[in-house]
Image (cartoon, rainbow, N blue to C red):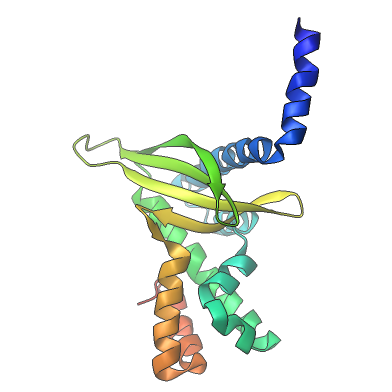
Length: 193
């Protein structure tokens, strides 16, 4: 009986590769979330940054966050922008992990998302049961066969969308050079305002 089911499962996986990939995305996030949480508890910031680099697709984040402005930038401007954004994303994500260290993260499955797979999670406070759970979803895609985060959606609000609207506002009012200047100033603080 098992032998007759195996070819069926293989055929199903080959016919619908997105389903197998989605399960891999959720599994990847579960493992990395555990590693990230452990490093936060140990205050291992340098190791945390290296792990962030395994988890995030900074190039895709930079391009999506800059929107149509990306094409107007030369390679040096793109590289500088991406480097600054990398620093800010690392800092913001580290800060959020520290804030939610006493939360239980429950993985709620995955579904196709725009440009990848959306891994759904829910964070519940372990110390305050009255506190409403927070939905945190990770939009992921594969780069060279490895899963990477391209956006984080918290309670329906996209990280990339927030950055894009902030960046667009600064560029429209003050220009791209001013955006880079503000990002440099905020990089030490880890936030964009």
